[in-house]
Image (cartoon, rainbow, N blue to C red):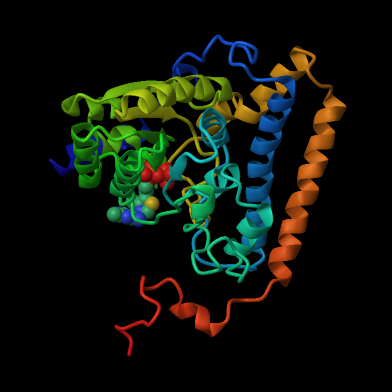
Amino acid sequence: MSNNTDKASITSRTASIIKATDLPKPTRKTHKGLNISEEQLLELYESMFLQRRFEERAMQMYQKGKFGGFLHLYIGQEAVSTGSGYALNDDDDFITAYRDHGHGLVKGITPKKAMAELFGKKDGCSRGKGGSMHYFDPEKHFWGGHGIVGAHLPLAAGIAFANKYQENDRVTICFFGDGAVDQGALNESFNLAQLWKLPVIYVVENNGYSMGTAVHRHSAGKLADRAIPYGMKYDVVNGMDLFSVIDKVSEVAEHVRKTKEPYFLEIVTYRYRGHSMSDPANYRTKEELEEYKKIDPIERLKTYILEKNIAKEKDLEAINEKVEEVVLDAVEFADSNDFPDDEELYQDVYADDDFPYLT
Ligand SMILES: Cc1ncc(C[n+]2csc(CCOP(=O)(O)OP(=O)(O)O)c2C)c(N)n1
Ligand SMILES: [Mg+2]
């Protein structure tokens, strides 16, 4: 009996996740078809490259012991944050889980504030109190950065409810990992979002794994199908292709804004690094990783730009160099910034200023 179980679990452990070659078909639209100007296309390239270089440097700083705690890298998934940011308005609301650096940068948190937050410094976007997993900037309509798997899905419904109540036409987009799909909070949120017709787009970034557990070992059925019992509209998108994300999120956002109905998107993507810095990722093969790197979203956009003669190799190199400098400046800023004052411990704990519960 136990032998059979062992065999079964070994088999399922070596079964593959969605192969890089089996991703949903990318959109056929060109940048012109998506109304993206050549200038915007280069900005999108710069944004994706910034997210990647920022995290590569963050990783180095972590390894040097410049900061501690958890560090979950988004590398490989940048088309999802970037495409969604492009498709939505600046004042649309974003909320995500702890793999949040890419989304935060896309929403306009500056690299300096973002890096300082990693270092736990006072000028970080959460004043050094949140760290990697808790980036926040409500003024930029970025509502975190949440460490508890699935816990922010009801918050997204709440933000969407507020927007609908205020009749301000904003859409909320809520990102979470495949590991959150079977949390009760997803069902509670989907139910209310559909029942109350809330303008929210729920996005599962299916990157194949929840920590070391492959999707097919932790979730029965297809992730996108979770929308079906609630009568919620849904779709599956190629998350390694920037244009596909832009195309689908634009279309969905227009629908959600108009109808005030929620939508569920499964965006299939892949993380190149381990779950966090302490994960050697022994649960997957090198070949699987290499296959995904072949369809890297940044390389893909670069090839497109070069093939369409929108820019030359040296122009992209210049963008890369500029980004590199921005990131190094951010590191220097974070390193020399002070830690928060002790008094900061008492700020933002309670809504009331007089801390009635502490005195
Ligand atoms: C409620 C809860 N259970 C367990 C954990 C521990 N945990 C942290 S991340 C994680 C995996 C989540 O994976 P996924 O949702 O796929 O996101 P990804 O890391 O792939 O972005 C787990 C189980 C947690 N933070 N919260
Ligand atoms: Mg995952």
